[in-house]
Image (cartoon, rainbow, N blue to C red; front, side, top):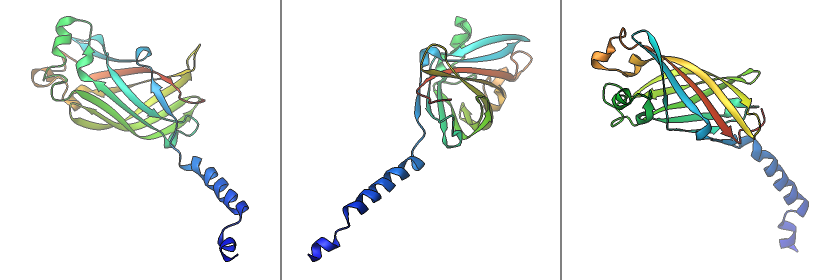
Length: 199
């Protein structure tokens, strides 16, 4: 009888389990979304002799753990294959992975890692974080708009930011002359994401 009395009542066990289950979502990670690479793009625009020239990165990946309803707890990590940069011109494309530019042999990836995400309303967000190119890291703030993609269970995240290439030593040596290749580079992105969650 003593042993029976020491056991907690069944109703107490049920209550404890119920409370534990209710507590789980508070510490749960935001839902993970998957990047749909063939429906996504990263474009960069620079000026050569004053004329805008558009290029793109062909290979990149992202890890997105983000709830649009509670963005503060989310995170975004992006990795870009620097050797995949190109303007679609064979001579220029052969130069971009080399040492004065992206030096892909020593710095095969550029990356962005968010440190804070803030909702601005109407599907707009502000993502602050560290952008690393060619071994140099700078903190940037990226405005991002997220909208449902038509005809599917996808969302599209798009935005742009402007960086100075010389801050990251892209175009070193003789290419620091900004009258030939401009210092300002606009980066535009459009990421299609699966499983982001309701907007």
